[in-house]
Image (cartoon, rainbow, N blue to C red; front, side, top):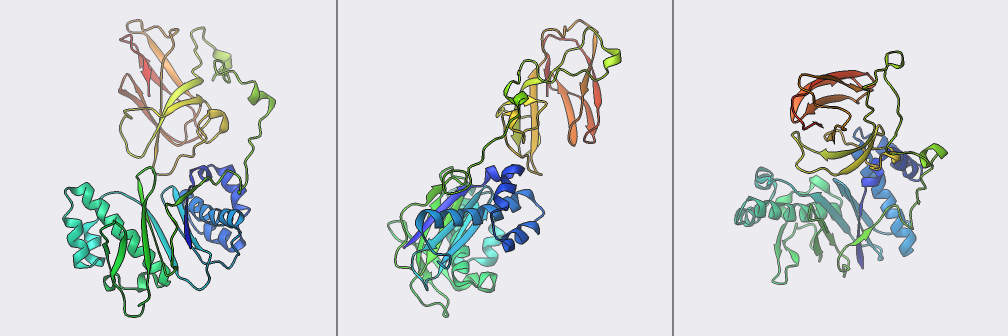
Amino acid sequence: MVNVWAADITPLLIEEIYRAYYNRVPKWRKEKADKLRNVADRARSVGAWILWEKIQEMTGLPEDAVFNLSHSGKYVLCACSDRKGVQVGCDVEMTGALRMSVAERYFCPSECKIIRAGADEKEQAEWFYRFWVLKESFMKATRRGMGLDMRTYEFAWRPDGIPYMRKQPDEYPGIYLCREYELKQGDARAAVITTDDEIGGDYKKSDLLKKGCMNMRQLKTKWADNINEKNVLGEYPRPLMRRKSYVNLNGVWKYAIKDTKGFPKKMNGDILVPFSPEAALSGVRRQLKPDEFLWYKRSLPEEIRPESGSRWLLHFGAVDQCAVVYVNGKKQGKHVGGYLRFHSMLRMHCKKKEIH
């Protein structure tokens, strides 16, 4: 029987957690991960192998068992069989926009026809990814990869909704079982194809940080245990020129992480400034990806009085790497350069005082 497992590798985007798991994988897997430039790609490479090791621990499968790995976005997938000599291939893909030009280039005409028959572009995109993960799974099961012409095999669906191969390459005449899955959050599709005589039911969800893998224990100092959110690092940027009107803005802010520019409609939660989102003390424990934008937001305290024409300097100790400051929705300034101090001048003309 073939069983299918999926896991979320988001925790591995935190450097200290990634390093702990990286040290567990074989040398060849380390070398493979080291060749990847993107942080998320390295996390997926290590996470996929950790998932396989965890499955071995829980099921007792031997090291020479037949298995296949796949990863996309925040997910890793593993399909494994308890039989020797069978073929197993799996694929997971984050869903997105319709890629009709790709379908027209690689898919069979009948498959393109099914995609175009979708009621709208969203449904058409869903059909595209259903075909894509099935075709990718078959290529991996045969170990041919892109060397196998994707037009030489064709998929369709039985009345009960299970996919099957309506046409197969001449060199692969065997009986192949197919299964497809929609991951729980609905943002990814997955499929498995095998010559085994059975595929288990729904995929199994695995937590990489729970029993069967390394449990991470957060180490704290005595100062971290006694931190006061209302008085966090009450430093002053220029101690010799301290003003009575000075107000420290360290403390609880709202934050949001987006993959597009523009004001967030909804914030994700609280973050303790000045700690970065990767740090445990921030309360977020989330590494910012290269293509993401981090937003901070808070209202200024009552000590900052909006007297007409009054001026305030908003000091930043450091922002890594680029920062744009908005007050009441209006752009106040921009700065480029990590670990450098900068400030922005505020003119108060209204009672609303909100910083982004």
